[in-house]
Length: 113
Image (cartoon, rainbow, N blue to C red):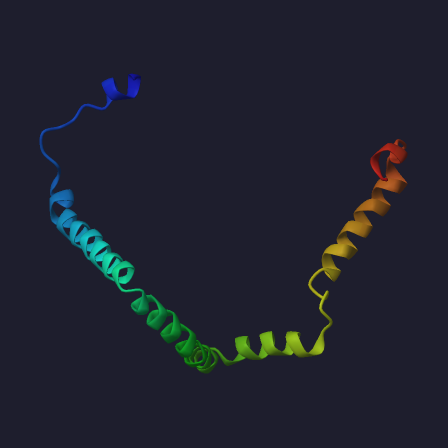
């Protein structure tokens, strides 16, 4: 209630709003039209999903071409390491933390179970 008294409505919007608002209205209306079209004809949605599924190998290949080291790292981790390799560093950190608590805190029986 207080904010409605503080924020008075000014009769006119500023120039930035007047210049950009038609674009955002067009963007919202075109999105609404395309969404209505997809919901009216379900096969369009299936075609778009199929197109996205079909184009993903090409986009991954383009990503590897633009950044070759990134693709090699990701593939190397998948092939060379076991499934839980991501959790190993966190396990070492937590083990070290528990060992520090056991050494330094006299009330450790209530803290670690």
